[in-house]
Length: 602
Ligand code: ADP
Ligand code: ZN
Image 1 (spheres, protein in one colour):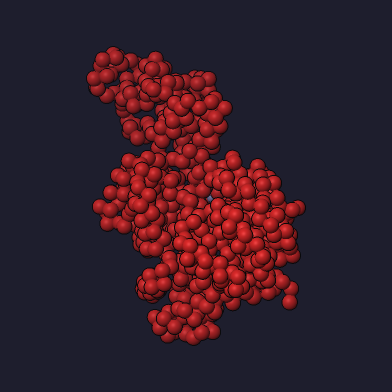
Image 2 (cartoon, rainbow, N blue to C red):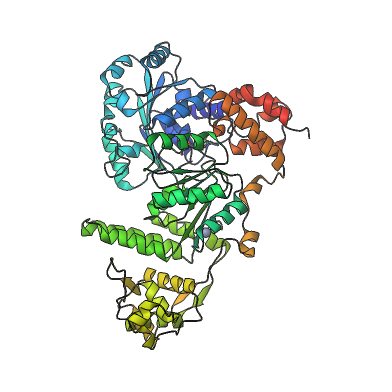
């Protein structure tokens, strides 16, 4: 039998999966034939399998270097549940626990040994594993080696010591970060020997991207969750700690199990939230971007952004935490003029060097272009990361509800004139007040009620004016001059528009729950189309109970996909159960009978 066929057999028997995903097959083949290998796969692509399967095929031990202690523990527990002998060494262990693991290694009963980078480089540990037969070294989250990334870990820079220590071992480095510089760094710093590189597409086809305009954020969010994600687990990102607190409170008032997470909370509070997120069903975490590293939960059904991220990289990383299990998930965001002003002023008001500001501006502009896009969002995202998607995706808001354009040239002219007539000294709120003929003190005080532009925009609502300002800003017709006063000024580009030589189109408003979008949106709940929601709920509760008993996160007992498969296949015996996605021998023995008992006969 070819090594890869053996690997495939183990994939089915141990893990219950019938096929490889993305480039798993190629990567595993390369590793099994002894090549150093660099595997780049998007989040949720199934990187772990690329070293777990070889570990089971090869003689000796596989060392896995992984930066997060909490994840390491979960992975080892998860592997044990699959009947794979694994252990870990990290600084959170007592010396007794450590000795126990070392004894098991010496006795040859551990196939995969997870180690924190700082641990593996300690003299004592290196000594204690000296005589081991190490066949494979897997470096997870390998981008941590690169100084250019904020995840940089200095210990990663010394990991090549492992290679020197175990020259016969193959090394596989894994990451979801694809940029050229990071890739080079990984190869150089880890001393990879003529590695084979495998790059999978970054597309996450199961994630549906939607970007809407902010009206009333809590109301919009509530409606979105109610409509598409009642009872699901999700993450809501906000820009500030204060907003995180506020939104958490509102969601709790609305009856959701919502928890706040941000850097201002104590380590203990954050840890508690992390545990709740891992171990409970139907929770919503409201967080700043501090919540990120260490999210391994594959069944996050939605990621909602209530504020605009600073860059597409950030947006993609955050939304990428949804739907790692490959099932339908939503990446939903709202934004408005306030975000544009706030983020721009954050850039301009820093003491940073001009070069840094320039890059930040570019990144924000790309993000804004994505927001205002009238073409497929996925195509824009993939293009940003250097991939070409030839067809619109059919699974983003633009594809599902093509934006209708409206000629807003007249409104734009009115607005530009009002900015001009008020001396380019005022922010959007005042300019809009002038257009709408407000009788505020400031207007009277500045004598702006006598201007020719006063009151010429009465028929247009404030929020509509805000949209026009935003789109003019984003398209570079106007800009903010002084970041303290946030006064709007015209740019060169405004001239032909003012003179009526050019037209200005804006997107018509799209609201999340228009009848139209309802019809076109496939609610994620119905994805398996088995129509057995009650059974799913029973199985979910059984899973939660079993998970609590064995101290595992529920998704490690069985994934949602496994439960859905059970609902549609209705297995009646072991053979049929073993055909369910994600049910291997060990899972059958542990949980099979209890699940069978809950499943009705066909
Ligand atoms: P990541 O690339 O983000 O590290 P993981 O290794 O955590 O992804 O895998 C994500 C999920 O995909 C896990 O639940 C894993 O069991 C599952 N998975 C991995 N390989 C396969 C496969 N070939 N078929 C089906 N599911 C798979
Ligand atoms: Zn699309």
